[in-house]
Structure formats: C-alpha cells, structure tokens
Image 1 (spheres, rainbow, N blue to C red):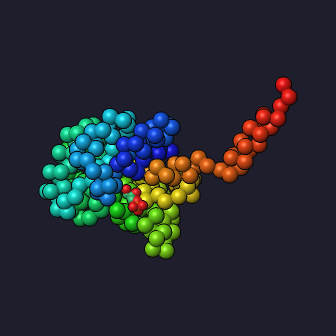
Image 2: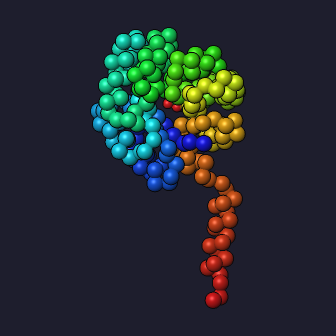
Length: 214
Ligand code: G3P
C-alpha cells in the first residue's frame, strides 16, 4: 500500500520522507492557502523532496479553464498529477487530459457512481473522501469497498486514493480493503506509529537497564 502525505507543508513532508512514509503528496486549495508562498514555488519544492506523484488542484469550474490550468501545472514536472473536481465539466477535462498524457486525480468523490464515471473518463487516480462521509453519518469506508469491487470487476486502471483520512483506523481499514493508496495527514502518521504498550514496554526495559549490576 502506498502512503501519500495530504499536506502542502514542506516541513511535514521532510519529516515524512525521513521516516520513509512518503510515496507521494496530495494538496488541495485549502491546504495550499495555509502556506503563505506562491503555489508554483510550493509545488516545485515538494517535487524536489518527493520521488512520487504530487497532486495539484485546479480552481476553474469550466472545462476550458481546467485544461488551461492543468497544462500549466503539468509543466512544473513529470510528477505533477492534476486534481480535477468530480463534475461534468471535470470529467470532460479528465478525458482530454488523458489523451494528452497528463495525469489526473478526480477529487471530491462521494459515491460509487462518481468513481465509475471518473475511471471511464480515464482518471489516473480517484479520491473518495471517507472522513467527510463519516461526518454526515454515512460509513465512508463502505464506499472504498464498493469502488474496489467495481474497479476489479472491470479491470479499471485508475488507482484509488483513500482521502479525507482522519484517524489510524481509516488507514488500517483502507489497507484491509486493498486500497492502492491512502493520503494521510502528517499527524495521523504519528498516531499510527504509537501504541501505549510500546511506551510502557520501553520504559520498563530502560528502568531495568538502570538497575543492572554489571
Ligand atoms: O485532500 C483532500 C482531503 O484529504 C481532505 O480532507 O479532512 O479536509 O476532509 P478533509
């Protein structure tokens, strides 16, 4: 399973890379807005730190605007994957970009039907948002299982990025379902590493070590 970091913060990416936990990065307009630096510079810096795909989202809502933005973003480097919202103009843009060999990540996916359409349009990646579904009282992870089944049934090439990950259980459940990728906030990587019995065990080992006589 691949781990992407869901952040536009370079410090978090540096730390994640040092731990060997970063196979790629996803950003979105909200994450980029938290960093007070130009979008292009942020993306260039992320691409220099990370070997894998780096998702950068368009903000146009019409196909032609999305295509213009996508072509500019793709010039930043081979690693750039253009994030396109799951709308009808977005699907049209995805189809055109796939013909131009520009990689796409269809974002804001909340149903199996949307994921099916995104795959048919030729999306390289599809991002169902599990946490935001949980927020509405629907079990977000059920959607991942359904999408995995549909993609397997028809051998779709689109990779599933489990997005809107909020806690360690989301990552573990995504892994059990065989999702290709989870895009994870930096904080959740730390939570995944932690177990109280590890801390208690380590404290005991160190205390016993201090008591040794030789
Ligand atoms: O990048 C998209 C996604 O991961 C957003 O997460 O927590 O804002 O729903 P969240």
